[in-house]
Image (cartoon, rainbow, N blue to C red):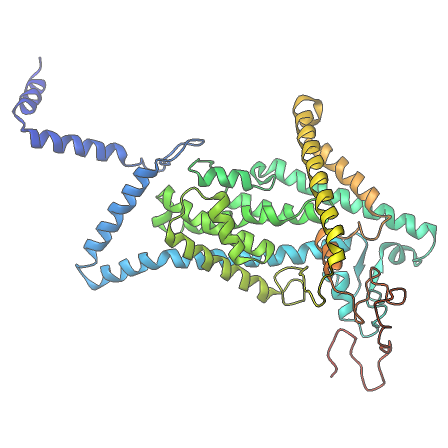
Length: 459
């Protein structure tokens, strides 16, 4: 044996039990520390909740002990305590802003398939007619500033030729939007596909999926969500908004070491972000908290409950301040009851519930069968062509019916609105309904001293 080996063996044999325990503890502490530039956990692995909790407890104990040393350390301890609320505030602001931008962009691009506003091309059909001084009450959707594509190209808005041209361009716009959406997802961010809620539930349960909540996924998800909904596909933006909000939460976690270096604390933030996503999707802050508590979260302490509610409120107020629908509400459609229901209406209510349950069962089984067929046939190998084909068929079938041309939110909004004298919906027939009084006459053309449109205040 060499001399260094003999010396080390002698040192080990002469060490006391206390020193041996300290040496073993130092070795375990060294092994527990993550290596530089290497994540604590590998991809597609689960986290150790007890280890993360123990690390956070040790970190909090060190901060508490240092806060007694100087005023600066005390201030740093206060900043650390308030960092959770700061993250919630940032999540709410960004989630509400992105939701408002998405709503405005979807409204504009949905109308872009039918025409364009000449005065300002970034205006939707409704916004364009708001700014017109020639808009009347009965023809509030018709104004010279808004022109359909056939009228803009040929100068004619009536006849078979104009109808076929508008039909063709409507389908082309739908195919273009769907192609851009599926191409961006397939090339740049495959994790941006789908609603994202099943994966969010998996991540919150302690599973690691690197890149699923990254900055690039957030950008592509936001852009392609607008394109997919605007293409006319039968899907909504409510589920993906939860994924977008969780991406925002993961983005702000990287700004604070308290959350970036602890996967357990990070999931507390993601639970609150999921609540903010539901809040801006449905206009329900309390519903968002309950959704996060009951459906997606695995670990939900009491402090996360209050922070989730705070993030959901901030997101809701931010969306309302943007006011994307022009009605000072969080959603486009809302329900108001001004007349009581009658006992005889219970029969159609029951039939409606039965039909909805049967139709939902049929839809779910058909969806499962289609997904299985995609996995076992050649359809799953060509996702781009599949999306384009579905978007093309949807556009061809939707254009002849003016109600199927609208987005899902606009259609539900018209179904929920009360019929009254100021409602111009074709679903409301005042003259043929025996229970409605004749509508109040409202002049279509303003008098001479008034130079503002029907949707603008008088000067």
